[in-house]
Image (cartoon, rainbow, N blue to C red; front, side, top):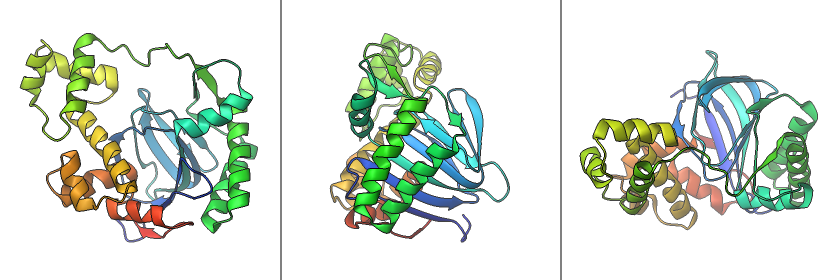
Length: 281
C-alpha cells in the first residue's frame, strides 16, 4: 500500500449513530463486505469503481453513491491515481429518524439509485462532513440533518416492512443462523451442508445467490460487524480478535482494514476524539 494513502475515520459527538471517513486511496482495495447502516460516498477526485447489486459502477469526481444497509459491495481504484472521497456511514436509526418527519408510509428508507450527480446535495453533505472534521458541533449537526433531508427527499423510497431483500430459501436461512451462532467456532462447508440437508456445492451456490457472498466471506463480514461494536465499547484489539473468531490480532487487522479502510486500533482511537484523527492508511 502506498505511503501517499491516507485515511481519517471518526465518530463525531454531535452526530450519534454516524461515522465519517475521509480518505485518499491509490492501491487499496476493499474486499466484498456489507455495513449494518448506510454508506454515502462523495468522490472528490479520481475514480472509484465498486461492485454493487450485480454490476460494476464508476464514481468520478462530484458523484454521490448511496448504498443501502447490509448490501454487499467492494471498492478499488478506477484510474491509476486512485481516488479521494468523503464517506458518511449513518445508522438505520439515524436515517429513519429523519425520514419519519419527511416521508409518508412505513418501512426502512432505501435508495433505489446507486450513483447520482446533484451538486446542491453533494455540497450540503460535504459541508456537513467538513464541519464535523473541524469539530463545529452546531454547524455539523445542523448541516448533516439538512443534507440528509435533501438526500431523502430527492433519492429515497420506502422499503415495506414485509418486503424480502432477497429470495432466501430454508437451507440458506438455517445456514446463516448457524454461522451467527458459531461465529468463533464455525463448521466446515461439509458440516454446514449436512446440517441444512444440502450438498456443499449446492449450498455455496444458493448461499452466494441469496446473500451476495459465499459462506466464509459472509462469516468474515459478521465478524467485522461484531468487531466494530466491541472496539467501540473499548475492548482491546487483541481480545477482539479472539472474541470474534480470528486467529490473532494480525488476522483481524488484515480483514478489518480491507472492509473498513483503517486498522482496528485506529478505528478504536477514532471514538475517543471529538474531531477527526489523521491515520496513515
